[in-house]
Length: 132
Image 1 (cartoon, rainbow, N blue to C red):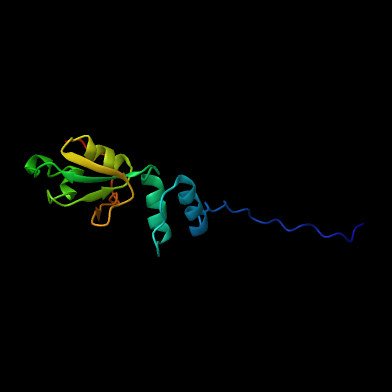
Image 2: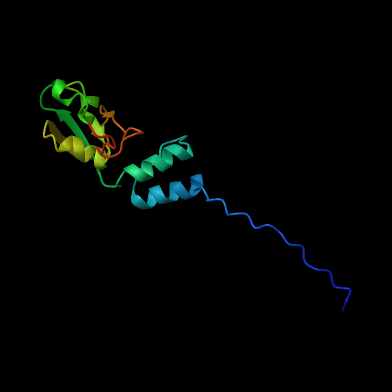
């Protein structure tokens, strides 16, 4: 049995973390009941999966105009008082609704004339990591 060759020692590299595929993200979104936009890229799907809760969204409008007090708040994205907006169910929408400056017209899918406001990319739930 001297003719056996020794196995070559191979370096085992650390396994690369798998990035989720577009199909797996679409499946996860569908399971949560979150609508999948046409032509979305993986980054958009990951963002939607991490920020939306899957519940019915909010069709809202402002009670009155907002002042400079709310300039740094997410509600500043809603500028026109008579415009109907749709917010996805998320921590972002919860923070805006807690101001009580909005009238919830209807829960569910966006109405035909509603302006869709998505969760901004850098939104961290209102948690600032810097001390001021």
